[in-house]
Image (cartoon, rainbow, N blue to C red; front, side, top):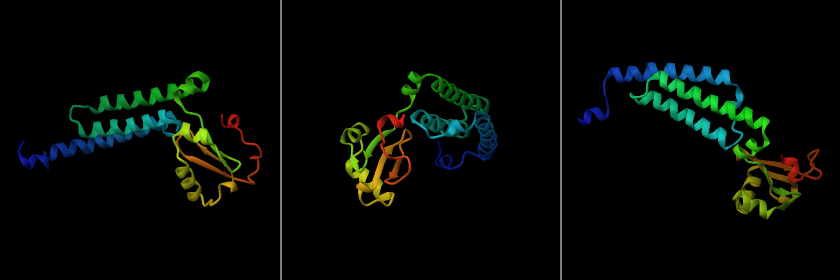
Amino acid sequence: MPMAEWIFHGWEQILRVIVVGVLGYAAMVLILRASGKRTLAKLNAFDLVVTVALGSTLASILLSETVALSEGVAAIATLVACQYAVALASVRSRRLARLVRSEPELLLRGGEICPGALHRARVSEADLRAVLRTEGVADPGDVAAVILESDGTFSVIESGTPGTGELTEGMLR
């Protein structure tokens, strides 16, 4: 391949990327709107996988001449349908729900760090303290709870927040 082709393959290829890009984007927006907000919610690892796969699929449609627009749209629809089916089934089945999503982990309760929970969640005490600093908390004793949520975010509940009297692991599920 000549060096010039590394940079430019011709106007036909650019036109293909533009046309397929616009149509692929439009198809993806329509499919996602039809499937509902849950499809792109970042609630758990399964949702993340679907979101990344959707992006990868759209990139393949745009940049690979061997993938036709119709095939790419079918792939997007298949991913969204699978995500929809698993989400619907996990609402109806606790067993499946436990299989596809993680439970929140209580890392700090009543100002006391929960070492076992930190270990299970693979979060260091330094990481936990960084989360507290990010939330503007200097003293862990000022916090009712720190929860590692299913989507990987941290929730910091300050002491004195109504309803935080006796937080337990069971309240997280």
